[in-house]
Length: 269
Image 1 (tube, one colour):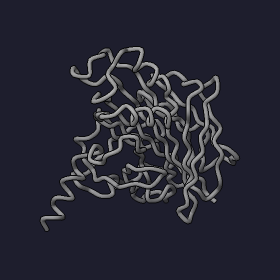
Image 2 (cartoon, helix red, strand yellow; image 1 turned 120 degrees about the vertical axis):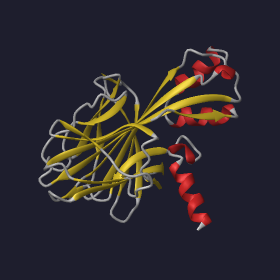
Image 3 (tube, rainbow, N blue to C red; image 1 turned 135 degrees about the horizontal axis):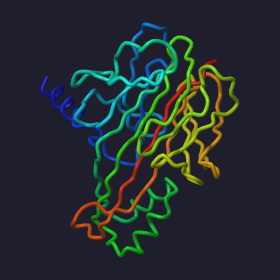
Image 4 (cartoon, rainbow, N blue to C red; image 1 turned 120 degrees about the horizontal axis):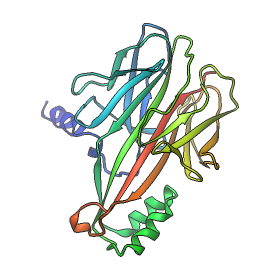
């Protein structure tokens, strides 16, 4: 019983309880397509390659958590410790967009090698160059980061479309995977409501047997990318933006901030 209580306490600390900030965070519905009147159930997950630990409901760890359906917003509510984190009646019929914005969290880099590995993995070479240009020491410095996650769920016929929700950064689906006949999924990557041009987009595709394939893509001059899809698979799209904070002294606080955008959806058979 003591072990169970300790495990729950660790989980309810929130997203920062798991080491390795370079992990993705996403919303993963138990079913991406449900009938009208059925509850929407979804996990909050943190991990790598579309596989990770689920976290319980904890409204102290985010600043925005809602569902958007037919242009109407409704808060996602629950009780501390609920798993799955989302378990709510479906709002009518059509396409529902679940939106979550986390609180800021921090990570300390004890070595510059780990920072370089992260920046290289996310195609953020400006971090490495900027660190040297600003004269920041290469060990024991902090970065703050925030998560912006969305998920598309079809209720009934699933009709409707995704749209910008006003997040600092987000990935917008430019087609409806549940109603449109698609060969690729077009997406738009935004930062401060403007298209992000020539930035990396990671695509994780999960087959029915659980096998995950990872591919890397880049946005075009309009901030868009056409992502390859396969029927019967579910997908996680991820893109990271970074900015320099107005502080070059690690002893005074974080020197960088990153913004993580994620979008999950499924493509029916």
